[in-house]
Structures are given as C-alpha cells and as structure tokens.
Length: 334
Ligand code: SAM
Ligand code: SF4
Image (cartoon, rainbow, N blue to C red):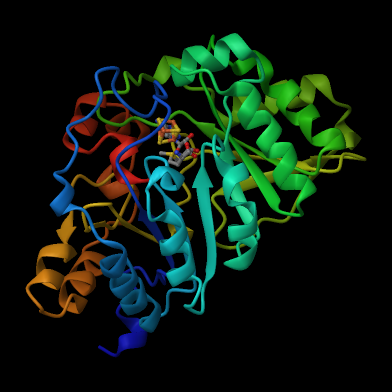
C-alpha cells in the first residue's frame, strides 16, 4: 500500500479530513454533550502536547489529509490553542474550527494570521433563559455578539444548532430568519446519542419534521434547495432573498456514511474511525515509543464499517445502551 492510499477504506472512501480534539474540557456544560456531573478527564500527561499534535497532523497530511478541524471540548480554552493553530497553519491544509463562541473575540487577529476563514459556532437557542438551561452557563449575549463580530470581520460563520423536541424545535423558523439579514449558515443537527446524554428517539427532531416546519412557514417557491458537495453531511437550503442559508445534518434519520471522509483524533491521542464507534486506536503511546503510527492508522481505516460503526438500521441505532460503550461527545470532539 502506498502512502497516498492508506487513508482509503475498503468501501473506497478517501479520508482527507482530520478532526482533532484539543481538550476534553469546556467552559460550557451542554446537556446533550456531557453528563451533569462531568466526565472522567484524562490525566494531563495522557493528553497530546502541541508538538505531538503537529507531528501526528503532519503524518496525516503526508497521507493526503487536506482539511483539519480543531474541536473539543472547547478548543479555544486550551492554553496553547493559539500556538497549535499557528503550527498547523504551516501545513498545506484548510484549517478550521468548531467553537462555542464564548471567547472567539480574543482570537480574531490570530484566526486571520493562521488563514482560518470559516468557523462553526454552536448556538442552540435564541432565548437567554433557554440558552442558560441548555448550556448550564450564562453566555448567550456574548456568543450572539461574537457571531456578529465574526461576520463583520469577514469570516464565513456556520451556526450549529442541535434541535430537541419540546425544547427548541419551536425556534426553527427564528433560526432561519437569523439568516435573513446576516449572512450566516444555520445548520440544524439531529440530536445524537452518546454516553450520558439521555438521548431517546422521542426527543429527536428529524429532517422530515424540520422540512415540514419550513414548508408550512414559507411559500414553496421561496424555498431553494442548494447543491451539496459530495462529502457534505448537510442538506442545504436558502430562503429566496435571504443573505444566509440553512441546512440539516441528519446523522440519525438519514446517515451520510457513503461519502464519509472524516477521521477523528481525540485529545488523548486515540483515533476513531467513526463518531459512533466505541473502538479506538492508540496513536499516542506508539508515537511516544518512537515507533511509526502509520500501521495503526492503516488498520483503523481498513476496519471502518460501512454505516455508523455497524448500526445500519434505525432500530439498532436507537438502542441507547449501545452508546454507553462510546465516549461522551465532549471527549470525542464533534
Ligand atoms: N465546544 C465546541 C462547540 O460546542 O462547538 C466544539 C465541540 S462540540 C462537541 C462540537 C459540536 O458537536 C457542537 O456543534 C455540538 O452542538 C455538537 N454536539 C454535541 N453533542 C451532540 C449531540 N448529542 N448531538 C448532536 N450534536 C452534538
Ligand atoms: Fe462544550 Fe461544545 Fe460540548 Fe457544549 S457542545 S459542552 S460547548 S464541547
């Protein structure tokens, strides 16, 4: 096997997109992402240093990775986040990050310096009180202002919103209307099951339900279906005349595994070949032992299953006890 096809799996999917979690910690406590009493954090010396992150990323780039997303936990609360962005920006990749937006204002110049052009910012409610409830913290206004700041500074901003029935599903149209005068790209994410997040199918707002809300609020000819790129996880739309767009990420009711090009690296140096896989491959121990990490990467890619780590039916996927073998989302890196 040559270096250029190590990241191609047995279904012909090329993995050119690496998502690196910088930390298991966060300044918010979103209920759908982590249990109320927190998670067991990895000991500090089990976490990748910035040099290790760079070394591993460089290896992936040499095998064909062209896009790197930094995530977490909250990537920006890591003390050396700026240094990591700077190191990774020296690689020939599109560098981007997913953040809760609380402290992005402190990084504007740095993002520009590192060539970061697009950011995903999470915001699940446009109401102060509901936001407090979901994040278990009070930063709504800060995040909202920071989204506006990012747009003003010329960044492409995608707003990630996890919908939950009876909680924020009544805000679908308000979120879409956010894109009327603000060129943001709202992405509704179906609530997914992870360890300790009390998922159940009844709380999920499906692609179909979201679309039916859209159709009952806008004229048919005002709803424009946009073209999705081959590896896109989203189904994108725009309301005619609106500056921004909206999209739906339907990992539960409509998985997009066929075009999956993602591989994940956790903050403690494990790779996960699928978001829903409880299996992990330890790169960090091997790297620290001075051995090649390539055989481990190769095996992880070659053993990737076709659909959601083997949970190919909604029935299998809905058995929430299966997900307790996996990590909480905060420790995977969404
Ligand atoms: N702290 C950053 C943030 O909140 O954007 C990055 C990490 S967070 C784990 C990455 C993304 O995963 C966020 O957009 C979050 O909404 C999403 N996420 C977390 N738990 C989820 C769940 N159970 N279902 C769907 N999306 C989830
Ligand atoms: Fe933190 Fe992001 Fe998880 Fe919320 S979704 S707890 S902001 S890591």
